[in-house]
Image 1 (cartoon, rainbow, N blue to C red):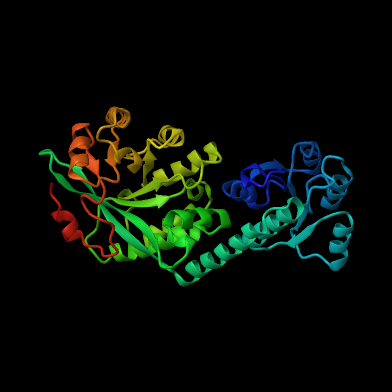
Image 2 (cartoon, one colour):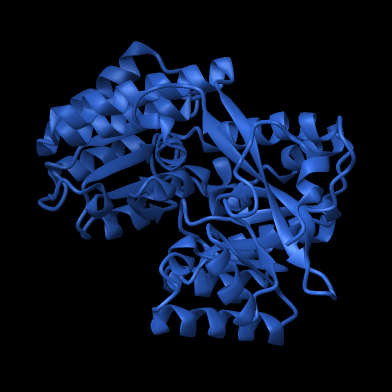
Length: 390
């Protein structure tokens, strides 16, 4: 088995009625390849596939999970594959002993914290396949940092205004993007690294919504802003916590029509139908959609097709070096043309110089964001944001 987690495959055997398949979804967002079986016979069939670890419910619709475990440990395909047994209820010591005697490598009773299961999975994979112990040390250090950030709310929102051309081709204040700035030292001080690790370790929802709440609390004290852009991973949309997300905005009296969920590439869309169904639920309530980092790769273009956003943002790496680069100018022209055809607002991110601004405006871009206009700031200053007229 390769040590690259993207190549590790987990067979998850669970009753489809339990947890609505969320365990499989979360494992997928953490980079594992997941094979799902909803009963014992299905699991036996799929166990002939290349599998690195098995997560097995003790209670299945057609068989006892301990019987399935016993089969795995006798099969030539899975006898050396680690198995974690999950029980839906507290078990006596005799039943646990029986499962271990049948070959189980670990045993966990519900209810349990997802993070405990993920740490056990990681440890079993390392022990069985020789994963570098330094990776585990780093993982636990990151877990400790994340818990500290979440428990003590060690992250603050920064605000960066977005500007749009008016009928006189002058830039007027359009809205504001909420950016996250960790209040710690170390590797997780970098926001991109922080949210990547948060997704991997199961802290993404708590971390992202914490930033939202802090930002909305500040925004609620000032003049209402018509367009608020909040970074959002597809994982949050795919999750089943829409009522909790809706309640966040209701508690601060922020109209959904003023909110753009800016979809980032922090995690891939793992289940397109589920994602689209859940996204429609957000739209039906009034929320809008923006797609970030357009032009950085195929995934973003695919996101535009699937999400039909109101706003797309040209990736800053396209904007940088635009002058003198015919390929980048062609990409910008294509994005601008596509947006114009479909009534989408096109925002150029990372604009740092007057030359970039003039060239982008000449290429047909109508909205802008970047240091040339205003750097991100922890101080919300709408009056100064609105003074920028270029």
